[in-house]
Structure formats: structure tokens, C-alpha cells
Image (cartoon, rainbow, N blue to C red; front, top):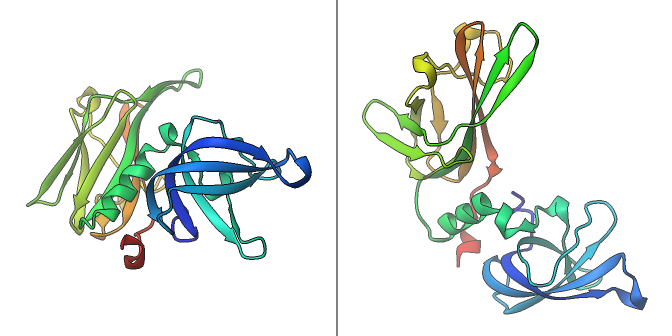
Length: 238
């Protein structure tokens, strides 16, 4: 998420798309009706420029988007593109939930992620699997315990997790087999595999849990990406 490097962040609906200067169809201007503004001036409408070059994006009238825009001081207007993080609202649920969580000045860490499962046939190399829905992801540190149920797509979410070192488990454990977590997808250093997830108590992180069956043993992989969802600066919450 490119919140910290953007000058304007909002959720809005496209009301008009026009060609650029001189009828340039490769550099268009899109007018948005703003629904929620997370950063920048609280205007009702914004005119955003976009290009069909690198990171180009085609906006559709009537569709809703989460927009991350940058100001061009020379032209005195905003520009955006796919590389800025702009995407349709339907594909930005995690990002929008995090922005609302931070904007509400709640404390703790926002955690979003998914659980997937791979079944590997070692005889012919075939791999089957996909999202693991309707299981509970559990975070516990010996005293506190937090739970989140995955949806049909294996997605889960935690809000307001306090700082601490948490063990991550899945309930029910698939196939009643022990689950292990690794910081690297194909680490063979089992003895040094981390057993806890370090939570700072602020900002957000993404948690990817992969469950892989191989050699008759169930293995897992924990990928911690704390920079994906950076904390919103205090100045942006006003």
C-alpha cells in the first residue's frame, strides 16, 4: 500500500472520463465523486489524470475505486495508475478496511491474510490445493488469545491486536497433523524455524499461511510482510 508516498487517497465513483489535451486518448482525465477521503483535501470531486503508458489504468464510468494519487506541481493536478496502488473497490477490501481502522484512531495492529493448502504427490509431481475456508486462525501468547474465521476464499482478518509475540495455529488442524511455520517458503532449516509472530501493536501486516503435505508430514509457511500496510501518520487523521 502506497499511502505514505501518496498526496491524495480516497474511495470514489467515476462520473466522467475525458481525453487529454488535444483529444489525446492515451492520457485521460477522470472525474471522481468522492465517498471517503483518507488523505488530502476533503473535496466532493477530484479530476485525476492517468496514462496508457507504463502502469496505465482504464477507469470505467459508474465503477468505484480506491485511488492513490500524486500531485504534479508543474501541471498543478493529480495523477494515478496501477503502480500507485489504485484499484477497484471490489479488489481492495483489505486495504480499505485497514485505512478505516487507522482513521478511526483505534490502537493495536491490523492483520490481514489468507490460508491455502497444497497437496503434493511426490510420485508424479502433481499439486492440488487452494484456499482453506471455514477454519479458525488462532493467535495466542500464553495469556491472550485471538481468533479469526476464514471465509470461503481462505481470507481472515484481525483488528487491534496488542504488541506481543504470538504462536499461530489453525483450528481444526488439517488431517490432525502437526503444523510448522517457516519464514522462507522452502526453508530446510527446520530446527531454526520461528514459532512466533512478532506484533508491534501499531500499523498493519499481512500474514500468509500455506499448508503443504509432503513426505507424509504437514508443513506450513508463515510470511510476515509488515511494510505492506504502513501506519497512517497523525497529520492524516485530522
